[in-house]
Image (tube, rainbow, N blue to C red; front, side, top):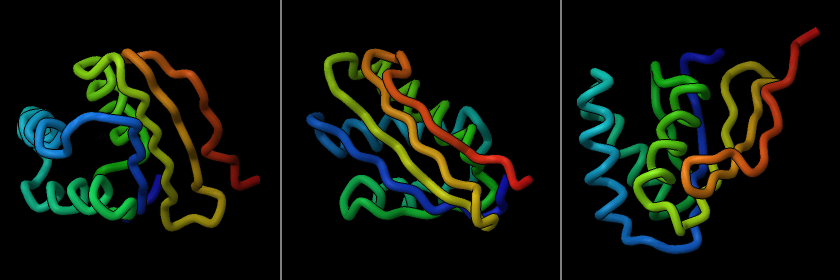
Length: 107
């Protein structure tokens, strides 16, 4: 697990502002610092975001939750941390994982 996480969030529909409103409420509930919202906005608008102290498992849980709220939309998230093999990808629809790979062991 890496302290710094870089990631992309892809989707095939839904309004960015509606997704961000959900993310803001989710982040507040989780106790994440409000500065993380800019990383999520960047990921949704430009396909590249980064956050500190929010790990890959946290991001996949977030995107799973988003896909539950927007069940007809496909969501993908992929990211990497500081370690070379700390890379992963997940795809969701209706809160269910439809594709998963990584992270990969360092050994």
